[in-house]
Image (cartoon, rainbow over all chains, first blue to last red; front, side, top):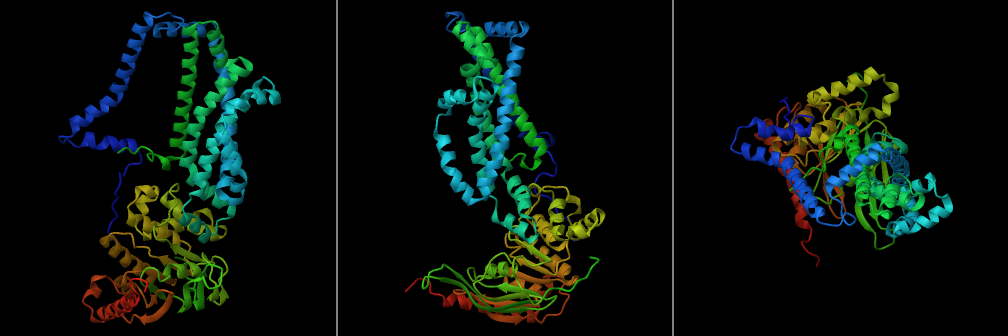
Length: 289
Length: 271
């Protein structure tokens, strides 16, 4: 029997594979590829530096209430950090976000699986999913306050209710699109109904679930900040609204940047989880034509 | 394989498959299908597309219902997926999130309780060795070529030493050379086991090379038109061995003519 050969890259890491051809082959293509790769770091860096420089120059000629310069924002950030305001605000923000978002993940995946697997559940729940997907949920903040007061529960509720819908919809889509052949495999090899869900439909939905989680993360961040601004005046949202009301633009922007940082870090954590826990999805969304 | 159990015997009697409920509008996909497969036999279903050969194999495997007639395996009627079944699907149908080894191990699910961990692992390893995938046991399906995926699908179907092996155009999507090699490997594997095999294909050469009998199906409504016995000696090692074999050529021509007749008989456009 002839030894089978492998068509795609034999290495487990797609990163290593993509680096392979450029370093291994000393073809005429190598220099331009290297240049391209260096440009993937240099180009965005250069772009940001130029942006900051322009901002600094323009900001220096404008009323600091209207626009603070980057240097002043950094100074304000340092001040918030050393004065002990940023730490607790950051912790509150992370607590609200993590609780609401994790709750949305658990509930969203569970409901999404049910909707994807059962046409009856789907038909029953679809009107609500469509309604809430179409409603500007921020408008419900006053109602949330009436129900849950002005504390942690209310903020978590707002975070949760903004995030949960895209997780439900994406999970349901992924489960529903399980290839019929894989369901047949489950039947032929006598998997229980439960194992068809956990072992076939759910793993099949993982790429969709992560797409939903990424969208939901952005929405959860919005919910968290708005809740902190409008409900409790605490955390990063609280800093933003307080310094906004005081016309301290540099401090306001420092708090905003911290909120973005939370988003970037959370998105990276999500991506790392995907790569470590679900390696078969690796590289699926890297395609670019 | 350690245990050599007898292959299943299949009896398909007057099976009919209709789509649509209302009288008069029903679409008859299969009508009066009769087929008898003996224990250990290799039978191919060939026919033009639309003749219902995939429907028939899915009914034998308990994956699709039929509306009249009976299908029995070892004397008992098929209700749901029969025991000790191996099924090879058109496009391998491997779970993308499971390694090759884990995919093959799925084939042991039904008898998992009767095996120790070491025994199960040993059987998976032996099966991987048999299909030449030992080195790729820890790869994910997307890292494999089409031929290797189908080898893994075959290993999953065979790892439990099934009494019945159903194969639905398993090599249809492969390139010609991979296809020839897998046909030879399959012939070897099946000849060494007692499994009964039903094999769906539209490749007449493939059917003649592999089968003890070839059931030629005709379309609209689908039915078994003629069963051709392939009286070529076994083992038939090597496809090229059959190329200049006169009897093989006759059988091939005969089967091909049966399939083509049916195609020509069908009106090219509705009158």
